[in-house]
Image (cartoon, rainbow, N blue to C red):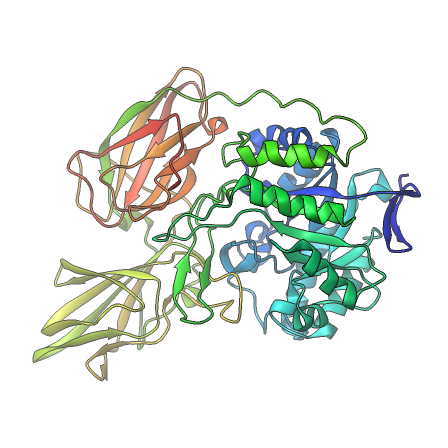
Length: 570
């Protein structure tokens, strides 16, 4: 079997020096029908390795309910077929701008520590996951060269007992390729997140020489590697799109490689936060909640729909200096549909998806209702008669439509000014989760109403709550016509030959889109993203179902447009 190891501060493959030229590509952000194309694009750029995280919550959405591991197996099989080695980063925490950093919403105990309650659930997950990874190691004829222990742990904690348990569990489950850690090249991050005896790699986006020097001060005998060279960045709703020039990114890559280091481009291909998996951040200074966009294009060299960008060609030129043979040609591009407008002619309400209502003295959170993602509808009465007082929602996460006696009066978020309401009145709050924070000390935040509902200083009690999951739309019954928000609208897309498309919703405000039962993700009028990527493999010849959930306002003419170009806010 091939052998990959570390000797005298260098990576070696079959005893020969080996430089890792890797690119990040997350199988869970790419439709399986496009995985082969995206991997071939990495090879065509000049890379020899692909890196992926493994999101725990994607594979165990409910405790003990494991799913979709065949996607990881398929991805690793296809990456070997494409001629790529692989690096796997199984967490259990991954960050990745993914909901809750990849940790399940239901996971018990003190997360990312050696708390036995937390570790017990991690080990159950690894019992299922690691046999899949182990079978793809180079030591068993596969292509996995290395496996990461946790992820950027030094940015969060310093519990080395926790890291050591994870390393031991990986080894006990047959992981015999080199293990490693990855952290920012800062003193406190490297000391907090590394383990003796395991190579420490860096994560950074500029000033390669300075960052490598910091890494070498801590680990002079480890191979020099940037495990995440940030060549772009992610986007938040309501903010300007993040971009980086191709020349600047290529110069940073060239500097890193000239220093003799190995590299993993983050991201080589970003892909899409399909469904409700997009995460969020909190500004570490202001505390502002920043939900992430559906597109994870990342301004990467291979864009969201798989096309090469100027960055691709610039990187290809740099990488060619470190290859023994020319990179292979680009694979054929997937087809794209011609532009078309689809009328949504039927509607349905939320009630068919609502679970039975429960009444509690104080508002239950999403988690207490057993809901990971979706909506919760809260109702509570304001006694009266009484004069208008401010209605205060303590701990609102993340966005709510406020109705009073059946009339919508405001859209609230956690920093909204209170609305004054007189009593008696019935208050309804339709609360939407926009993604859990995936990085920093607020990791693991709950959703819904985390505190209480107050009328001035007085708490309102006996709150009724209905969880409304959005993972299965089969119970919906549609009627001809249209309706006011919140409402599902449905139409039919006729297709002769399937192809990719970019779905635009001019005149719509905020919601989600499904095509043939698959959720493309969230849309927001505030941008920067204006189109949702629709992968061609989701479509079939003939009639295709298109459903939009609009939460704010349904346009007078409820149409959607399929375009042949994306609009991400450039």
